[in-house]
Length: 187
Image (cartoon, rainbow, N blue to C red; front, side):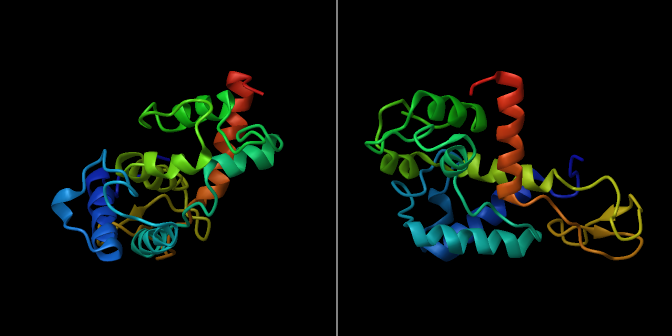
């Protein structure tokens, strides 16, 4: 169900807040096209802190694994990353499908270690929205469809007060890959 209780602007603002607090950067330098590593100076451990802050803010579970790891796990080693640690054509196709072509300079044959520098704020915020849009039609506790949000970030049932339970980020990626496999026949 589309989550109309948490706006895209709220997600982007909360992501910016997490970036400012984690990376000690000025909010004014954060743009949707900003690279986490190249423009904002994030390191791999920073992503854990950023994810944690977003999970706490929205009551969600972010993905623990990157799309490439899920591709390898689901479709076999070498499907996304070849023996030399370079992206395959299939990986590039899936990255472009997942991120709407918003990863600049992505092409088959680049070293997988270059991929984090290509991750930007805009698609990351979209990933949070994707999780939030898994809001169930009805509360699993009382079957009410009366969802509410007091703060514009955390959603709960208006009837029983139960916090919304969303699909976690990893399960969402797996479901997306399964759907793409069936619809696009990439594998």
